[in-house]
Image (cartoon, rainbow over all chains, first blue to last red; front, side, top):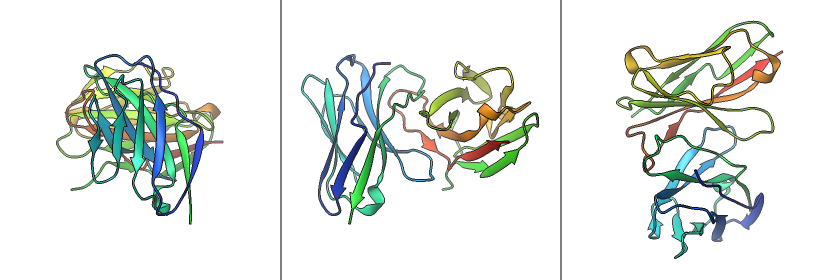
Length: 111
Length: 115
């Protein structure tokens, strides 16, 4: 599976949008881009995933660059509960589902 | 619907002892995964079951670790004998399809401390 690069940490103010970047320059055409997050003292939880087109769900939006070499997870209005480590993970479509976690981005949300 | 559950939530044992961790996946999920995070490191994949069969056990660190999933329902991960470096948080996850497009649902983890 291809590698991803994320900033170690980011800060945001409560109620403001947050854009979490992820670079994946070696992505293959059949790699899905998944985002998970881990809240303090909890297991990771799924946030969103996509292949080529931008995706929206109740938690977040995923913006995928046209060349697919980068993507951005967008939290439209950050809350204190969104403080977590966010992981960008590439998964080959034929993969059995094994997740390879990097260091992720630690998001701090300030009141 | 109940999520993935893990038992115990915490375990403190002496080096050389045996510990068994249990994971109950979401009902109907054929795929079950074990991961762990040791102190200061990233979350690492351990193994993947499809029903009762081991699909991928490439992440198991050594033969002191034994995972089972009898009957294709709950799974156990036994560490025998435990070593200091086994301390960490062990996560279990389950999914329906086991594919690259699938969503994995994680349990809260078991924190293992080996003294």
